[in-house]
Length: 162
Length: 425
Image (cartoon, each protein chain N blue to C red):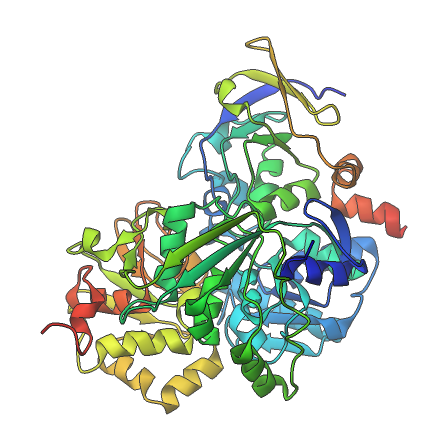
């Protein structure tokens, strides 16, 4: 099922967790951390992002620390999915655990900053409404789709343990 | 077809005869390690939501190392919450301000070859030096592990990295890792396993091996691994009092590797990685003369006893430059005690070093030693991402403890071999 359309915020390769959730703010609640999300490389991002927008990035997005506030900050800002060429492995798990869908797509360079896009994680598809193009994503394994469908690891475990 | 060491450990933890790369399997966790930042303060509300207690208190280790000692009310509250939660759950293995988790874990005998270990920190691959499959997870994954004793894993391939030759004097494991970051890139590990082997690795002590596995994180690997040998066995026996089984935990000769990279250590130069990436590493010669105002020997990567000794070799009978500060945060209280007993710490202090608490501290701006606007630091840590040590406009160079010590003396980046006995003048 297609998600609602939103704006693409495009970043480069190797966006790290210190940029997503700077250590200097890590003791603070998530709504304070998220105000500083990506401020080192995109100072306007946290203040202008809207609920339902998407982060689009190159290789190794979320590399570095295991601090899950890196993914949680994006969720707090209303990002509904991250589309990247590849992810830092721990970040990928953290995002999924929050129900923030991480999609791997080889065609991210075709998405421009500000393009309106929407995604269908189950079909592994991204629609670029601005350019009227469709891109394929790597299929998510069934086990991970189950976590995504539940809305994250905690609700998934609640169902399982409940 | 044979199996890699990683596949053997994962298969055992998953209760299968065999696993293959790409399989998604559920593994029983032998040990779960967490610290004060990603641990109790994050997992407590999640476990309460699930309405469960921890699955096995004996298999959990908690280390307070990030916000130590408390420096404001928030950090004091986090440390108190950690203590209260550990007491409430009845967890026997709690190390409160005893050092950095990745160093405390092996020194207190919690790791042995063949274990499947989840750590709530990205430098958890350090445990791979002991022949464990140890990888980093975030707090929600950790909560899932604490609730069920299990976690899923996509079986990784193994990238073998062989080092032949002999490491020259003044060069060390840190230089090997910076070279690998520059050669393979920060995504080069592709969340697979990096297994180090070859005559150089065999010749290294456990602490240098820990540096190699620690920085597998910077290669983007899920973990680093070194198959156990006599050096591993001797260490594990010393700290646990038991001879470990090393024979079962070796990769098969006919195992399949994604890649095998071969390097020669004979010509390796001291490395320096300029801002803002470890992958920017180059021979120290390219950065000689770069002025610094802080030098930091700290963190899980660069402040073990072996690292402190390297710095002492350079700093012996010398003083640091008058316009810089040298901060030294030994990686654990035990390491600090040993460094006191063997004279290493005295050399550092006489040279003008400022002794900091054993903890993660300045490496990720979690404690004292934060950089201000425009500060330039050289550090024995693993990451120099923009803003990691403080101000967005600060700049961090990475180097070995030798190279950091040399820069502290000169007030600028220099080749540390200038300051070692037996080199030139």
